[in-house]
Image (tube, rainbow over all chains, first blue to last red; front, side, top):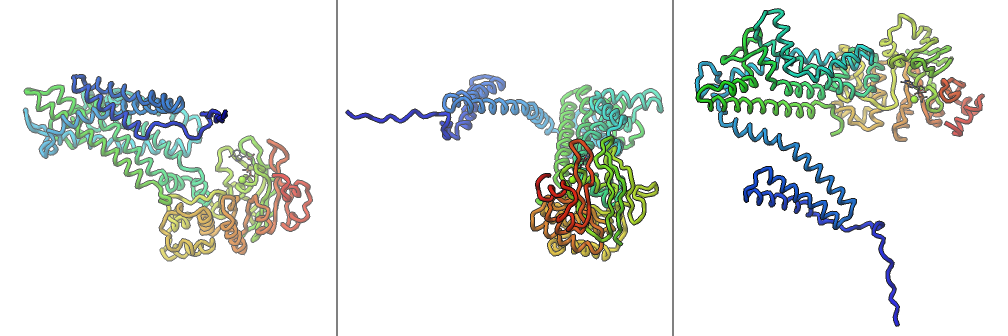
Length: 354
Length: 259
Ligand SMILES: Nc1ncnc2c1ncn2[C@@H]1O[C@H](COP(=O)(O)OP(=O)(O)O)[C@@H](O)[C@H]1O
Ligand SMILES: [Mg+2]
């Protein structure tokens, strides 16, 4: 009789190595999901249903993992899948908008579209030159008004107020102003200008004032955050060299936070450049080019797009195409502004060892 | 050039909190004085009250007298900005200006105050200050590079160069070596020895050997209890304080038995 020694059972929870899905596992599941979606689409499901099929197939991954790897890793895979799905869901409207605007707007783009106004144009042809000029002038003037006010207010709050009661009130009001509906800003500007110029006033600068009302709180907030990021040690280093406070603010604090402040400015411009409602009220629109902010109606891209699809004329197609074109140009401008903001923060931030 | 400091009955507050109580100490011109003591006993607070940096903090104030060569530092007609031009300061953490080159960092005192200078004059000041700070050889090839690209020890010496380029009469240093390696530390100690011939130097340190090596006079601060204000326990020649202290707490602290 021989006795065989049986090895003691392995305590799985104390093993360093555990069973694992192959590294190609997740990729394979995603590929299967895409294939499933394609198949569903081929047999007549719509896009939404196909996406749902893909998602359901992806949920196989946590189940598979639970069978092979055990509970902890399965939970990890489940949460990873859910978070990634939420991200994809959030991206969906973005890409959908981009796709729609580009596909519908790109066909009217031409040299004529950028260099002609709509003066005496009926039907085909014409362009957005007047609206482009209007948008740039109105938003530019809004920036000229808001940038100094916003930055000086933020400097007051961070460098001078030291948490006194006035600063708490300003901060509260700025927060409230951040949430002001743009139509209210437009009505405010209109009411203000009626005081000086009477009922029915239409002026580009009025639109700039309305946009400033929307821009200033954003600017104050973003600049404030940037100024707070400047380490106190730098201020103290400057004071210790016998530099007065105002010079310290102007020459140490502002340059150190310049990149962040300029980024904030650019983003706030991007935020208001597409505003329609306030401009509709106080600026109106027109078919001709108007370079004068202080006299009469001006066209702007968002109002142009709105008006073109509201009163398209006969046949309507040309006008609606132009509206999509204007929307595309506006979208590109906003994207450029965001790109500029990134470049600015890359090139202007203080450089250490890079 | 260098000036003496005479402190009498100085109380230092943060708002209502009395942080340092009743300090009286004379500090001779062209000497090195070391402040030692456990953390939180008010060494930094006291040091900052010597160039009116203390009042930069909201609610902070002092009572008592500080005389600089007989002039009342807290007199009504004293301008704190001018005081700080005369009494330079080096901080615990090196803090070069990140937006400025090495060259501009050295000249920061002049540039931030928009002082006009000829290029040759500016070059002279930069070279002289960097040489005194023992940094010239290491950075003369890259004066236009950002100051924040230097190592910690180099940054601290850059801050010292920046402080002495405005030719102060007194130099205050708050634990200038606490973030540095032993080699950078000994470079800075040598530097203190050299600077002593021109400046009155006050240095806060946690390092007993350093205090013994660099200082002529030593002052020991201590807390009388938790939440109580810090006090100056005793001061005198460094040899005396280290070999034959009057107070038992001083002896215990120096021998490393507490703090
Ligand atoms: N900015 C400040 N506001 C209020 N209290 C402070 C401030 N800085 C320091 N203190 C207090 O003052 C006392 C002395 O601190 P400090 O001078 O930094 O001590 P040390 O430099 O000797 O370690 C401590 O009790 C500390 O909590
Ligand atoms: Mg300290």
